[in-house]
Amino acid sequence: MNATLLLAIYGSILSTILGFIAIYNFLKERRILSVEKHFMYDIDSADYNFLIANISARPFTIVDCMVSNLAMTEAGKLEPDWGMEPSRLKSLFGDEKAAKLVLPHTLHPGEVLIVGTDSEAIIEQFSIHAALSVAVTKNWTPTKKMNLEITHSMSKEIHVTAFELEENELDRLRKKN
Image (cartoon, rainbow, N blue to C red; front, side):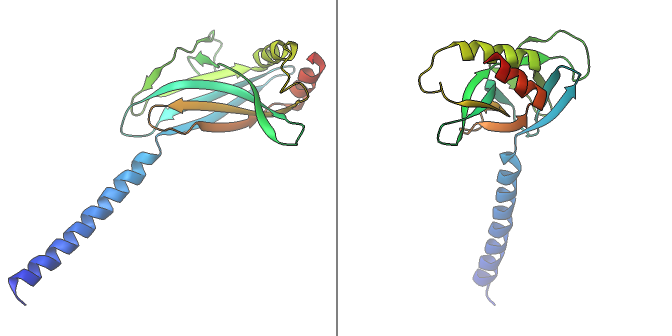
């Protein structure tokens, strides 16, 4: 074997290893946020809280965050009907007053943001929406299906976390309508 062949073999092995490392790093950076659901139920109300964590090695900015209701259309499809901004919480389990979520909000690696809403805020928002006369959504039926939607600087796609209201809250929504 001559030196040129050995150098070619060495170069191909090295470039293959470096290619695998580049693919591994790319795949590792794709998951940049994690959302955990934490719900607490009382006799007549519920708290829907979410822990948003930056699990990447880079900071990212949350540009928009919204809780939306999915309604059943006349065609039988689920579509976003109305939305509301969640509140910022200091902790998952505490009686501290919720604060307004100020956006944009940057999360550095390892940082968390806790947001949430409660059934009273959802019912109030639904009542406001139901009072509006919107021709397109007039015959839509509210469902217990909800989404937390997060738009951030590291992706063009909206990160969606689905959850459901308690059955008694859906009944309260329907009574308000």
